[in-house]
Each structure stands twice: as structure tokens, then as C-alpha cells.
Figure 1 (cartoon, rainbow, N blue to C red):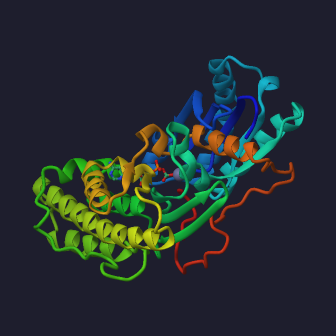
Figure 2: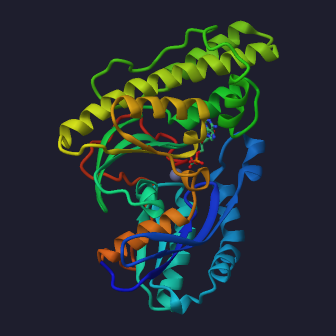
Figure 3: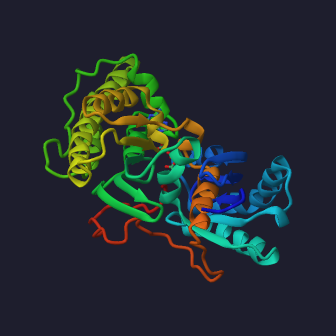
Length: 364
Ligand code: KG4
Ligand code: ZN
């Protein structure tokens, strides 16, 4: 454990958020967010109905230096007072990742500070420890626009993937459903709003992989079912849209409940002695209130403690990258300046790739 507090600058540019933050790690292992700035690019991508990699990279270049300067100013420290510079080094849109990582390398080199090349997924995985004591091991469910996976988080740098999506990510399924219904982007929050006024029983959408004895996910069949329903309906009334959204959300909720049950079982098998383990849910989809209820009841039923970080730390941000850097620095896990950006980078090196997963390689 480091003997003095460490100040880490974090940089996140792997998708459509440009972000910079300063986080402090105290010798007792607790953390503090000193500054945390996120610039969302949603408006730049909305006209295209999804993230355009070239636009994302250009927006990162335009704003990153200014955001870092603001984060440092708000933190009230100079580069020389940093103990390390952390940046997302993958997985994500390669152009964006290179911009953030190269910037971090330049600062690290100019100020003779250690570089921490962070796996973006590790940022999500370690976030709860920035907020409260959260002993290893715990179970992570990451549900975002690019990833849908269960990880067994056993320690800093020690992860075991229990399951992942074999096709679309959950956030992607929400976004595609919204697109089919002519709603805007990003679709998740809009689908949730419409679903509140809809009938979840009107359409009997599939519950993909329900009952399968593993922890994987699949959402492409559900998307196809939504597409066919929308096609059959022809002209869509507001009530039709609400009913499709509610029925879609009900199918997702039941699927997640089933997959959670499997993951809880695997966790108990791996760690029979942990009395009350934690379930961490992260990623943009974790903001969905209906799904949050499912997480709460499932965690309760299987005696897990549910932790859903606040939305600002659940979605992409640089504080989580700085924090992962702080945790790694405390263990002496620093990186060389020639560390290469990676478009694909599974958190768990031993997991076999799943055919079709992460096809877009875009959002994480
Ligand atoms: O983690 P995130 O902000 O970004 C990345 O994917 O990197 O997640 C964004 C995803 C989008 O697909 C968005 O539609 C979905 O999270 N999302 C939601 C909700 N809010 C955001 N999905 C369902 N319900 C929501 N309330
Ligand atoms: Zn993410």
C-alpha cells in the first residue's frame, strides 16, 4: 500500500465521451474524486442515429487538452504534483483511444510520471471501490452500449468472465428498438419513458437464452422480433409504441433475472465461504428504473448486496480510469511509454472469444 496519498490524472476517449478527471487515493485504500469533467458527444452523433468513429475522434482532438486543463485547475494542482497519468488504452474506437493514450504519454514523459494504460472495462469493474469499501471478490454485471457481460472481480488485474453477449450488447438492443420505432438517439432513456405508459403483455417477445446453463446473453433475436412486430403494425400509434417498449423491456427484465440467477450460482460455487457478496451493476443501461428493480429483487433473493454506482460514474467517465490507475499504481503495476492502443482487449485474457460478440467494437 502506498505510504502517501496519490493524485492520478485520468483520461477517457474510447467512445463518445471526452473526459478528464483527477482522483486521489489515500493510504488506507479509499478514494476521493477531486475533479471529474465529461463532455458528451451525443449531439454530434444524434443526426446519424449512432456513434460515428471519425466524428468521435475529431471531437476528442478538439476538446481533450482544454478538458485536461480544466480538470487540473479544478483539482488545484499542477502536473508536477501528479503521481501518475492514466488513460484508457482499449478496448474501444481505435482513433479515440490513440488520442487519449498519446496525450497521457506526452504528459507522463514531459513531467517524468508513471503511465497507467488502463483497460476501460477495468475502470468499470473497480469503480465501486472508489466510492465505498468493497472487498474482493464481487460480481460485476456490465450493461452498456458496447458490452454486456458478467465478470468475477477477484482482485486488481484478476478477472474471470462468467458470460458475455454472443451478438448485440443490451444498450445496442435498446438503441435499435428505439430506432425501429422512430424514436431518437440514444434510445434507452426514450424506450424507458414510453414503456411506463405501455402494456408489457401486449406482445410476447422472446426471452433469449432463458434457462440455458451458462451466463451468456443474446439480443439479436429479440431485436428481430421487435422489427417484425413493428412491420406488421404498419402505422404506429403512440399507444403501439408504448406497448412495444413495455413488452421489450419486460422481455429484457425476465432475461436478466434468469441470467443473474445463473451468475449468482457460479459465484457461490467459486466462493462458497463469502457470506454476503456484492453485485455491482455498471454501464448506461443500469440507469433503467424497471431493470434496477429486477436487480434489487434478484440480489435480495440470493443474498447479494446490490451496488449501482451513481449514473455519472456508471456511464463512461475519466474518474473510473484515474481510479483504476491509482489502484494499479499502488501495486506497482505501471506501463511502458510504448504501450499500444487496443481496439479489442478482453479483461480476462483466458476467456475464449465468443463468435459474433462485440461485432461493432464501438461502444463499451
Ligand atoms: O455506458 P454508456 O453511457 O456508454 C457506452 O456504451 O459506452 O451506455 C450507453 C447505453 C446506450 O445504449 C443507451 O441507450 C443505454 O446505455 N441507456 C439506457 C438507459 N440510459 C442509457 N438503456 C435503458 N434504459 C435507460 N434508462
Ligand atoms: Zn464503458
